[in-house]
Amino acid sequence: MKAEEILRRLEPKGITLEKMLDTAMELYIGEDTEKIRDKLKSLMLYYLSDINVQSLIMAAILLEENFKVEGDPVNLIADELIGINIAEYIGGKMALFNFFYYDTKKPGILKELPPFLDDAIGGFIAGCMTKLFEPTNFDLTETPTEGKETEI
Image (cartoon, rainbow, N blue to C red; front, side, top):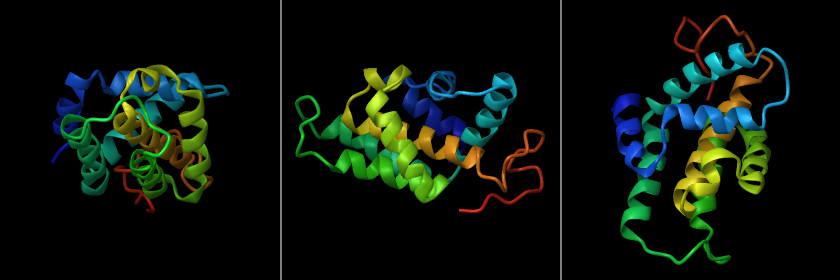
């Protein structure tokens, strides 16, 4: 599945690439916001093409469509587990802390989404932001597909 296909599945839920970028950048503190946003966009498209990320996001979509819960019950942790797994898959253990930061602050579209999707998308954003700032990957002129393998 290509990145465009998973984005087509997310769009009816109000989730677009631009909204995810806006949400990610809402908590960004730093300079070169345009360069960071462009690099993040490339990174997001790269990981939206990854079968493992797609599988976990699709699981969240299917759970929202087929498993009805009222609000976000305190004893529901499966949604958090999906978000954590996406974040850590992309950005390693450091992404876990970023996930909880996004999950607590609920910037942008995260505050509008139901429980499974807010954590899946929050985990995706947290993982990508963490990966973007890894010391070995912080090169604003190169994307993961331009000859540099992204370590997972």
